[in-house]
Length: 335
Ligand code: ATP
Ligand code: FE2
Image (cartoon, rainbow, N blue to C red):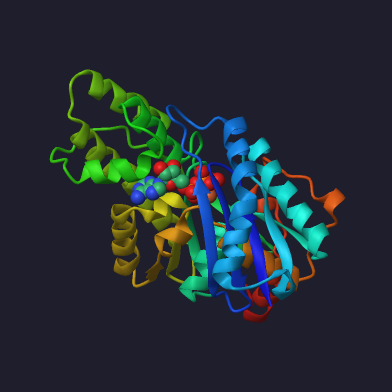
């Protein structure tokens, strides 16, 4: 059997189909790109309503499967933008009722963790989850994914997107800043905000825009922002790693596509004798396959809901979600 997953927490509408052995059979996605400025939740939700039915068809066709080949329908329940989440949940409920398949709610952050974990083959890695809305260092312990450190203001991706838009670019900013940073030569001083295992980015945003107003080159700003921000993420990952028995680290979230971040974390982990793994880009950014895979894990542990108990949870936190599939394994290896 396979499982179908629906992602719609923010800018990306995506449908993924994954086998029971975590083989990605299909991903069909469409990203909402605002013509200017940031994401407007209602417009992004309208985009998802328009695109999701076609994406479901495309994914089934690509996987060469029909509804009877599916064990369940999984959907991202939270966290995310309310209207966008509701668009995905409505499609998931409709498919569940129409095809008489169980409905499985999935936490979006846990899904980024689980797809990276299964692809890495590492049993109990530390995770650096760096995306648009979230920046967290996560490890499993006593029944939950625990957030050891995180941003205390904005997510790293939102910081990059806001900065790039303020510098005259369009969403998404992360990949554009990565290209621009390759042309930079001068490392400009920017606030380096690490507080224990937490980080903050709004001071760096203000300082970068102030340097821009004084005539600093965009390429040097991009280069300096990447070096400073990714050093901060590498430092908090290293601090968390120092408290762990194993040296395994996986990356997840859209910002984990970034080559400089991957290289910096890899160097740090390997210098400590550990192993670092980053999924292919298509599985770092938001995608339906990670929702499908986590839905499979949850469903195998007996988790599913009736449509009228499947309300979305825009503020659902990583560390409040039960992960029974990890508990059984953790008990057997003594975590
Ligand atoms: P969250 O997982 O917190 O809900 P999200 O769902 O908005 O966030 P993802 O799709 O996981 O986000 O990641 C999108 C973010 O990744 C955007 O902010 C984008 O700028 C950033 N990003 C994508 N590619 C790169 C890259 N190559 N370098 C840096 N950032 C990148
Ligand atoms: Fe995400």
